Length: 194
Image 1: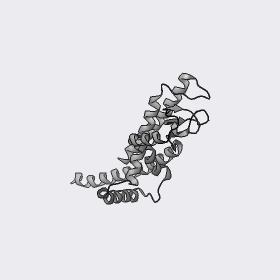
Image 2: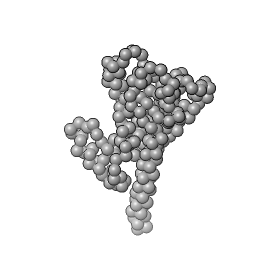
Image 3: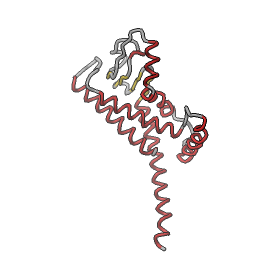
Image 4: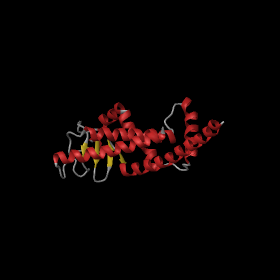
């Protein structure tokens, strides 16, 4: 399951970046924000963040109800032990926070509505902060190609660091997965010869 979450995250990151480039080419925009015809970019980034958050929650469970806490903590500890993960990865550990902006959109918008001065929110911009007008907190989602960072409301994630972390995790999972398959094949082979 963890291996698949990593693979799905990496594929979605690749598609999101490709969609971003395609949107920029369609409009041949230089130095301005593109706000139209690029929903696919943000759908892919949302998917990537969801897959990465799932991987993170498997390894470092948190925000749990009391009844879920003990089994989840045991599972996370055991999984980290099996994979040989000794310390928490900052990029992976922080991804559920930004993913939660999508999952808990209603409460995030309530908080935004209380603090906004303008009352308008910019959604799905392909631009750097230098180009965008308005308060940082009034920008719903944006992707800065130059920095390869995804921003949502006031949260930001460096997608290159996330990709590096997911790739490292994928490699560890792939090795363990192949080790387990070889072990299971060895267990089956003596039985077949009898």
